[in-house]
Length: 135
Image (cartoon, rainbow, N blue to C red):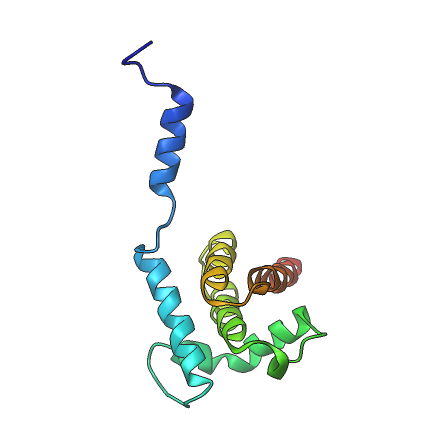
């Protein structure tokens, strides 16, 4: 069957072409947001990039605290907290599909967070999503 296309291989190739990459503009934007928010936790900044998150920080932090009551905000790793804040903002205030938001957050946590960051971020965001879905 040389020369014919295997439907399984074709579908896998098509799917892989649709998957995000580190150069995807939406992925890069989320990374920049996490980096800016992380930096602002050490050096107060009022940048346009993070303004929507800062404006809703009280609601975002309440959602995070409710989803992880055993982890006070000041005990959460600063990188993880920045990832959670960016992602919680997206879940609460945008129409981005939740699966995309959580997947991106987990990928960013794997790259920039500690060993268990991706699991922690996934669990907290899953709980926030479940809370949103109930309301």
